[in-house]
Length: 341
Image 1 (tube, helix red, strand yellow):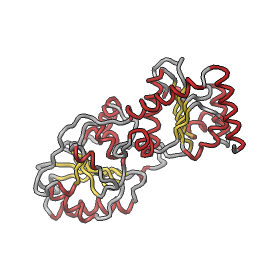
Image 2 (image 1 turned 180 degrees about the vertical axis):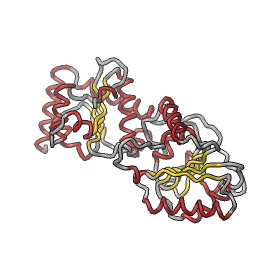
Image 3 (image 1 turned 60 degrees about the vertical axis):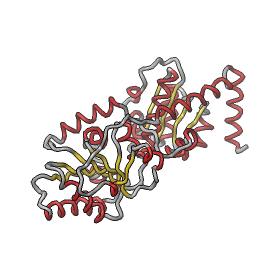
Image 4 (image 1 turned 45 degrees about the vertical axis):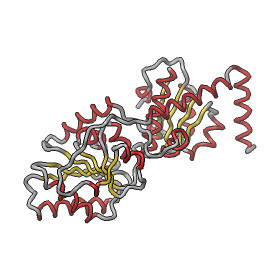
């Protein structure tokens, strides 16, 4: 696999932006955040974009046991990045071996806090084009879903009974409906199984079997398998209503980027500003005897704002280190870091 396909279509004369996530999970919100920010920075700066996982390096350099050595070989061919987005775990080695002009190592929440002064929303890689593409894939994969969809984007739920009772009560107000549970890498499998089973039991007890479909995707059931379909992005696009259960800033930020208000259950944040703007509403505040209603909103996406702030910072750093004298200073500071000064 060549990561050249991930480069931006922008001019290749500008700075090189590299996102390196190593052996981290590419489905993590932080991984998606780095990818979205890095690509936007490369496009804004007229530069090159490279996205790399250790898996890519293993495919490009088979038999190379050390990913760091494979990464060095990759950079021998493509050059060293001017801007590097990577995990804090790699910070010391990356700064001394690669000496990029800028390294971004904060997690999503930290970037939102430092650059925007707010942690309600975080960055991601999703765009209207990606939503459209995955929406079509979702419909092709789930051809039997004809009714409106309520997406349950699930981290974990403590009070399964409360949630299930409220969900079934609202679902009963519809002639036809599909409740689609989509789990994440942080979801406990037994929690998912308990929720899905309880929803199915209540649907039968209430006589909703013929008009309420309970669908689900168990992330861990498909983990490590080849050619499996993850419905997450397509579900955001195709669902009429979205509920996020548990603590995930990414799961709230991504539907808002698709222009859909989000209902939250047992959230880890208050979302005060988003609630004031009508972008987020607690699930239990939605009347049980009323149909689901999700007004369309103007898409909200902070990835652009964060990329803009980082581009401004990079331009200042690049100006400081321009020319051979600046390069020498940069090298000297890299040596000092390697020696612990």
